[in-house]
Length: 334
Image (cartoon, rainbow, N blue to C red; front, side, top):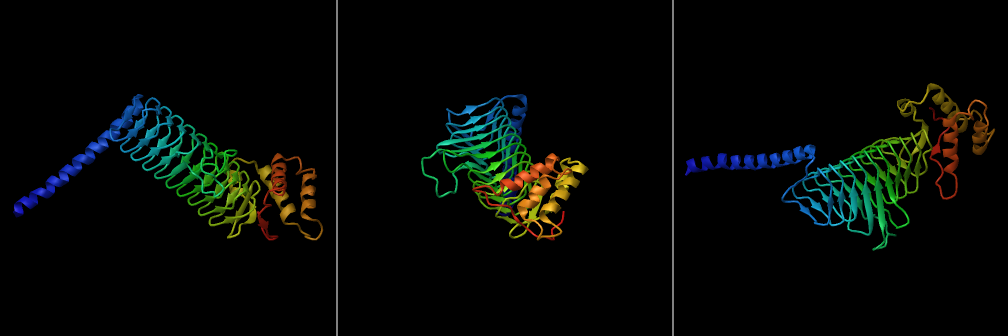
């Protein structure tokens, strides 16, 4: 009896190893076929006959493809990833294990080319806005070359007259959230647990540190930086850096500007303009609007495009239905 028990353990181990080996071989075969330009659909995958599948698509075990789905050429679906509703994937998109794209709702989810949807990310599902009415169309459009990491959630719009938009070349790290009707530009980096409420606008080349929270309807300007753990409840103008539990201006995003190729002369002019606006030597001499006007009419600063762009970003934040800019302290430096 003891000898039989001793034999059973090696036998069980060998069967498990054999199963894993077969599973691994199946996936390797799928990706090899993808390289050769032919398609592969694992027998356990559920693919609706009305779905449109491009050439060289690899669909792994236990995946689900809905009736209205369209997959471009060369897409890869790793095990247990799913595509629902009126959803379109461009060429060479990758869905990692557990990713869900699209929802069985009126409207659509459109994903561009060369996007990576990370493990257990949820992209293009119903929003969390109480104003959303069942049956209304809702939309999400995502551009090209985005990396959306694990456990991120990106929601469709809250109404048919709006749309959630994400541009190109964005890195959206793990466990981020992009709510309904947000507009995200290009080349942004959102660190882990960045949370954007509804209707937030982020321009281009912005960078958030981890655990940043942005209030609904806020605008984040191009080349801005949000410090870790910050709660942003008002606009962040272009080129600026904010941090704090209630985020305040801390100066210019100098390192970000240098990395993005801004000239030394441009940065010097931006620093001078920032000091004149936010760090006046005599706080009683002129009001905020007057300081903006002084910089705009300065012979050396007013003609610099970056300075003009920063001034316009500040002014726009005070127009109707905008939230104003984050608070600043006179001792801030840049």
